[in-house]
Image 1: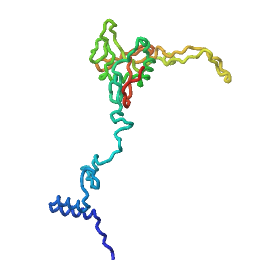
Image 2: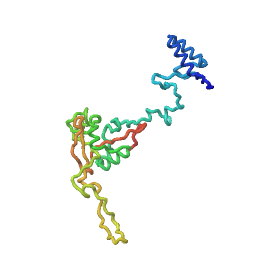
Image 3: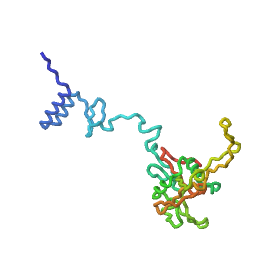
Image 4: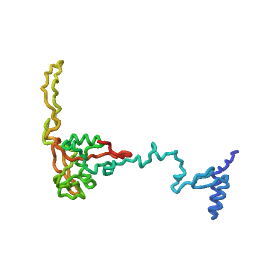
Length: 259
């Protein structure tokens, strides 16, 4: 003889709720269900020994999900503190930052601000020398150097006649040249006292001075042109020019290192 399986408690509860709901006695059904499962409280909030209701999205409410103590912090810092930020003297350009003003030269540094100086200065600040494309792209957000006739509202313009009124340009990391060989790329030179490899029968090389700053290798200069940005030509990389630095966003960026 086959034994009949007893209905599960869940099936009994569902049947009770169905019967009462079809007769319009939904509140009575709720109380019946509660009593049928031992009087455990039903709530949308966690209660000891209670039954937790799902939300409308059929998931447990966020308030009911336990979190690890201090889980909202990492190393004692909040998510806002860990988010990428720009240094105080830089403009936030979305995924990166740029100095709001040209690099401040000291009296001792004046005239030394060539391409190599600018590249090293920006690296020391934790950033890099921006490209011509980056400068032009940022022109509507950053007041770039410009001509004496441009608006001070959109560009950095000299206003003190006693110091001379001159058109200003921005140095970029973009390099151009119209020549080839050492005239364009420079020459590492041959040091005094260098000798050839005697095992290979090499003759001693002729000493030659290094040429790290060839005149034909030039950097692209950029100016504001009324929030549009424009190419101003190029200058030999040995020529000094105003420049500013660009930076990646970093967590908790408060101050740039001292240069």
